[in-house]
Image 1: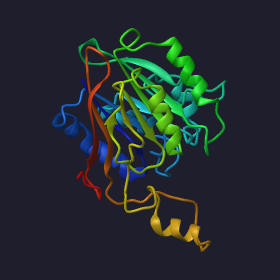
Image 2: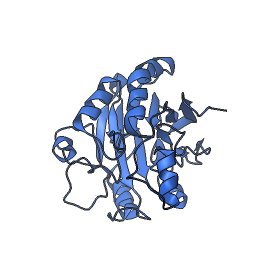
Image 3: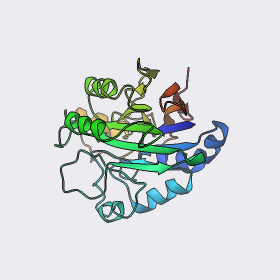
Amino acid sequence: MRILFLGDVVGTSGCLKIKNNLLDQIRKQDIDFVILNAENADASGAGLTKEICEDFFSCGVNVITTGNHVWDQKDIMNYIDKEYRLLRPKNLIEPAPGKGFEIYEAQNENRVGVLNLMGNVFMKKSDDVFEISKKFIKDYELKKDYDFLIIDFHGEITSEKNAIGHLFDGKATLVVGTHTHVPTNDARVLKNGTAYQTDAGMCGDYDSVIGMNKDNSLNRFMKKDSVKHFPAKGEATLSGVIVDCNIETGLANKVVSYIYGGQLKNT
């Protein structure tokens, strides 16, 4: 079982890269299941829409995760209750539309659990992610409730992501960070068999400031004439991780960083 996780899709350039390349990459990389974070996929760079989600599903995406920008396009609140393949962070303060965990059927009747979490440090207020995680670990078990478990941890700081990775080591197939839009060079299998990478990066134009137009962003930092952030529109890079899963244990055999197209290159 081979799973591809793609980091935050940013703006129109990221969406176009998915639409024009994902199905071909699924075939070439022999991918069985695809998860991507789409909380920045709107043309504005904030939020996502029903139309974007349905485009992604038609391109081979199995599950869409999100983060702190999930509600920036308000219509998504109605859609998320109807679309089980779209998740929001599980530790959002309730009541909140949608859900943060679901189990999906993949090839050969394999069950893939996907858990969407959001960090507490420097993020919008949400329930304690470690308390929610401990309860989840108590309630669910790898190879009993699902064959594989993929966790998208949407967070700002590295130490929080590291800690969640170790908390789920041996209990999840993959823990991968999102939100910072820069892929980290630390893909590895932890001591108890869980694949981990601190951040998957973004599917967007890297000739930018984390996906946003670089000139406008520089002007904002230097307090010159600027407008609200808007996405860069150059060729996007697809960025994420590929994990090869052990069907017997549900843990990871191997994990590698995945980079395709645009300005970044795998080395």
